[in-house]
Length: 253
Image (tube, rainbow, N blue to C red; front, side):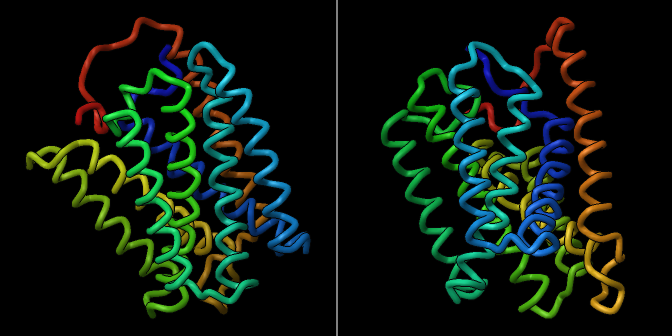
């Protein structure tokens, strides 16, 4: 059963769109609407689990469902990270280290159980669960990294986004010009796209006196949701056409 999309350019465009939307939507719920980090985390993790159940029950790749789960991991990751770092007082650096350790554990258990971390080789229910667990943790980690860069590193929102964008460019170059394992590069890129979305989302939403663009959480979320929905509709239409063969980042051990 092929239940995940091809890892090509459009995948990464939609991933960054979803992660940026996850940042703005999570902040909209927890801060703008004043629901709070804890309550927002419980609500959004619940939404993620419901959508995950639907994804695990599906028998084929459904773009709208798949990207809804991705968006849920990103939105929940935003509020869970904020709860850890701010409410629990771990701070961005310590919270990030905790999440790095958790991601290593998830990937290690996945590798030990399924003998592969390739996202194109997932053919068991257990493999799917590990895949989504890794995505949830990596998106939560990405929020902590993005907040650390934006607030504690001195780079600010635009500087953090520029740094992460440069690192992503290096990953792309490594994919084409080195023999580094594509699975390794996939997960590095997957983690890095989240702090890029976090810092870019903050750049969109924060007021100008905080060196943001001042679009607000509601306006930014609406625009990003419309963009992601348009891409999902396009993907759904394209998915009905004959698939093109070819390799992709994340397809080999």
